[in-house]
Length: 117
Image (cartoon, rainbow, N blue to C red; front, side, top):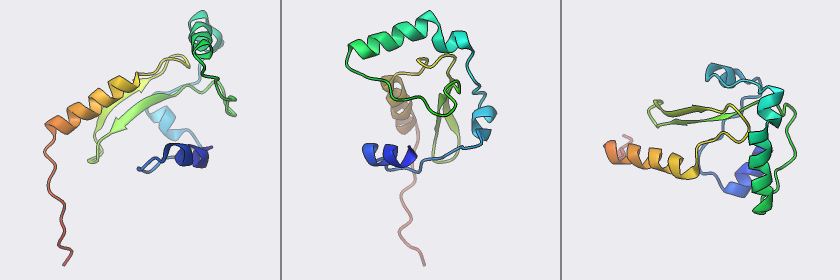
């Protein structure tokens, strides 16, 4: 699935695979309860997505594992840490872009070192 994701998105950065879910636990991401997974809010969100033409994919091997979003800058500093409490609980793409734009506006990157001597 990771290779298919990389091919379909042409993702230019490294993709971390956490097969043992150690980072999930370290970032406070847990398995969802039945209510979180199949609650009215989740069902309603997925029905709206289906109505708008998005067909959810087949669930993974642990369909109760909730995710989240973590944005880490090139220095290794966490700039956003969102733990999902239900499958549909995710920051919007616009919010993620705002965080990245804000970071780019406040950081002063040093010029690349082109002399490797």
